[in-house]
Image (cartoon, rainbow, N blue to C red):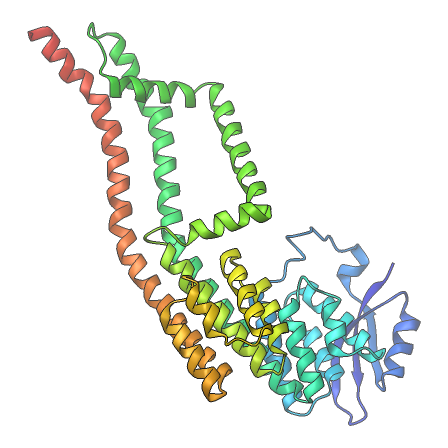
Length: 407
């Protein structure tokens, strides 16, 4: 089993370089460093490798999009400044805070040193470097502008991270409030309602229907039937997720996400911003149009938009303009259709798509701000409604009893 070694070496210019390298033993690592043109100063096994590092799939080996974006920006800067790809990867693999990403970067560096192209080395790690990333790097290699393409990739990733962060931020408040409402409801049902239920037994009067419903819910949550309810909810969630994983289910789900009056516009504008910027980045990087549309369709994140992208691809293959199938599809607003049409006519399609992406990203920002101002009072009303309904239901028997006694 390979062990990770921390090393300090000096290059031909006498500069001290620190990093890590995987190897079966110390002698092989030293030999490899010498073959790379370095003079080893110290090579020691890492403490984590001696103990055996615990890797939990999906937890300890998780690499966030933000980590990849930061690495790509630093990588582009180093390559632009004149560092070789292998040297830049060596430095960055030692600097990144995510150890799993560091191991992957060392693997990419080793593959490049063995003769593979950078795009081929990156393609060996599809969970970290997706098809969009690899295709743009490949286009940069073919065009001899790898530093420019890396900067474009970094910008694209940063835009995606920014959009995702804003959408998550918009969802944080409603999720927290709904969680508080749910917790408060359960506490009332399990702790408070049973106290009133014992009181109701002393009243010689019929209980109103709302009170009966509240008591029945309380009895369910406080008994073994709560387990059945929980199991049904879990099974329903699992069933829905499996249905969404199917092609037909995914299309239905993505189409539904565009319809809600509050969140639908946010999902729609987010998808359009991602579509515009991704296609603009691919076209500007020199990736062929048909291949770009294929990649955009798979990376769009929405099945409806993906299907629309395939329609655009068929039209372009037939020699028709981009704008024709876009104009016929309601998922594309007239603004982006007109901008694409102008871009085709002036030969600046990538520039117009970039402007469309900036416009829709600003729209996402504005929608997020409006969403917060709309949801805050709405959720407060919902919370008050839930609590008020339970309290009224608990006090209704008192009024019924007074009416029953004096009636």
